Amino acid sequence: MILYCDTSALIKLYLVETGSTALKKLAAASEALATGRVSWAEAHAALARRVREVPDDAAPVAEAKRALASDWPKFMIVELTQEVVERAAEYADTFALRGYDSVQLASAHALAQESNAQVTFACFDTRLNKAAKVLAMATPFALVPGR
Image (cartoon, rainbow, N blue to C red; front, top):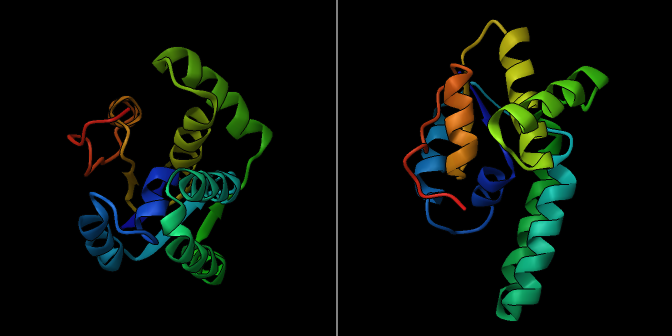
């Protein structure tokens, strides 16, 4: 099984948050971890916001950035192709998703279609999980309240 992590899940691999323990167990049981190319920028933006909002988290956030940089080459990266962005545009409309949420969903769905392995979509956003379920992707965190 390939575990596709959107940015909300990716951050939980590096900072202790609600859902981190369950996600780390699922990641350890996966054959591979995947994410979209856009997750790099989204993760760094989220980490920077965390430090602005909670200055005491500066040290763990700095360590999270170092660990993400070290692990990044190990991830299967779904590239942001024209096909992915066109599908993302369709998903934004169909599922009423924000821009980057639709890009994450389109990236995961592209990986699922191109892969011979099962792709599980790890995300902590209710609307995005509902959309992934419609696309027949496994969503282990679908019951977690989203934004």
